[in-house]
Length: 50
Image (cartoon, rainbow, N blue to C red; front, top):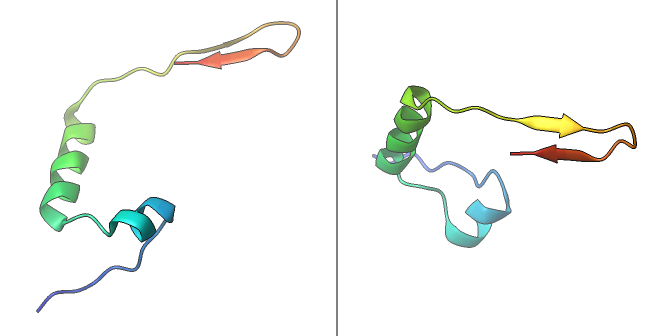
């Protein structure tokens, strides 16, 4: 028995809901990967993020 998940965003509406195996692998990768978000701004409120 397969449980369908409703599309959560425009990409899922266009391309379909990802397979559970793909979703699990991506979640595992994100959970185990070290990453940093850098952001800066100046006095004129110009912002940049990477």
